[in-house]
Image (cartoon, rainbow, N blue to C red; front, side, top):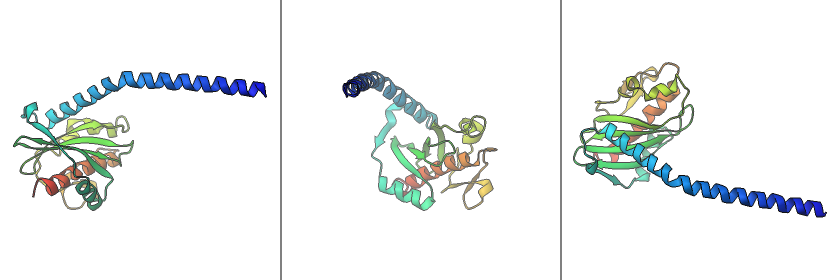
Length: 194
């Protein structure tokens, strides 16, 4: 019986020390991670609105009801995570689509005041190398740029909307990115395009 108690106490001490060390490492890395995420976000903003000055970007609260209603209407699993007004030039909508092949795909979409997609930037993606990861290449994501439409469709799926050529071998990724852009457009139309 003494051996069981002794081993239990040793195991508890090891767990306690490991927990304290993990908490310490978390505290040390928390600020650099937040700084890197903030930098990546601002770089994405500049990518979708290169003509804007950083002082023109003003964050706005997200209307989650509008985001949820738009996703439901589009039949996708996506949500708006951040919204930003870019002076009198337009809006930035950051969307996470949960239907990527390798997991969530988070993108930033720049939309001008007249509803034209000014550009998109992919913040996070973990798709298959050589296939879905090609979504990060300009040949794919620039298909959305300069288009004024209510929604986009992957051309091989058909339907109403501006057609987007799917990535070869990565239709699921193409649909997820297109869904995220459509969520951003629907949010813009329901909040700012009124």
